[in-house]
Length: 319
Image (tube, rainbow, N blue to C red; front, side, top):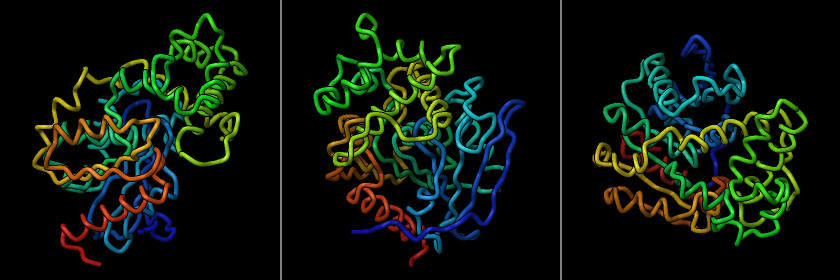
């Protein structure tokens, strides 16, 4: 089983204005003359972390990590204005141009898989290939599966679901996304933070199959609030995608090599989405692993590191 590469620190960091409102935090890690790869984090709104650098051999890759709008160390933190999928895709291109990279490998998990597909389909000439994990295609049916009472996730983790649902009065439970958004957008900070903790508590407690179950997210309250608001902002706007867009436009990237890694028991992003993506993209390699949603589960980490090593071999950078 492959494991993460040892911890590394950035050799260069950038503060890149991309609009009159938003400025991105960008890191470069690994080796400056290595294979360019861009890491697109999940959430949306989660930001990058030191662990994300470690899926790539630092002797073979030039690893670029971007805090998306409103996320991590990008500013303004938690900002929803001018924060859409199309603007995030444009930001990735601005980062590529700023760094002088002609083409790069595109890597993303969960929401990062959505953004990876959207970016590569918009700019296929700038991608050398894709690695996507925990596939989320931005569809209402996926949101309903995980976040609404008509979905299936509540049947898998009933005790965790009940805590998530209990935060909302019974007469508002027919549309939990809207009920949560009403509270996440409340003028009362206490109401906003309580809703964010319950929202992310459900997500955090569904990310892996086996772990200690907590009643709510243990993250910093303001970080939790920012992520919950950005997530709800994207979900209630259909991820700013046309219905079926990412499957419809797979033809634009079918010539690119790709690996799809999916946890067989992923409750947040159910395997059906990865399966449908692979059916639309038969040239891609789909690897179902015995794991849940998190990239840090052993089987998923193994598959992802093997994929990045395989791409390094393909691109002529043997270990």
